[in-house]
Image 1 (tube, rainbow, N blue to C red):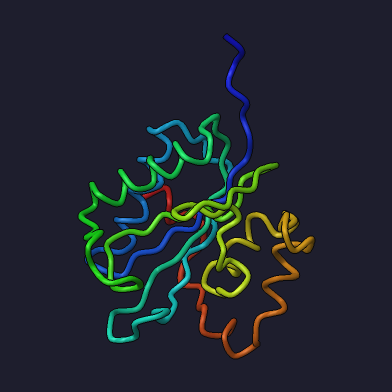
Image 2 (image 1 turned 45 degrees about the vertical axis):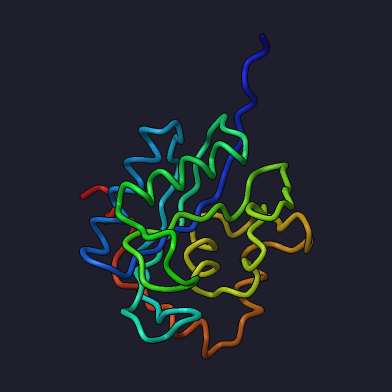
Length: 175
């Protein structure tokens, strides 16, 4: 049987319930334990909620890693991590959660299925993902739009980007 193909992935992480930083750190550790070799983790950013606004602010970060997991299995890993942290999958969309792990990009792969989109279908519209992602993967090209993550970030309205406030450097992931 041929060896599984490894590729780089970009993941977006967010938390706005409980000890947000601890939830994010636990997610990074769970990704490592689940077979993602972490290459880089962005700084932490505090951001206003997106969608439903009657909820606490988020801490957001981005991660670049290498894995042999195909997109579907990587999504399953992300959902397991969210479930272990206590995420309520029956809650309305865009409400408060202890952890959110989204697949932003996978090197050389696009997926368009009802429950899985790679690149993430709202990536280009979310400064809270683009700002930390540009820090660790700014030169990655969005495979459908043909522009870099940095270009996408810079195309967002300045006032929206200003709401994404850096609160800590990448050392947060070390504990």
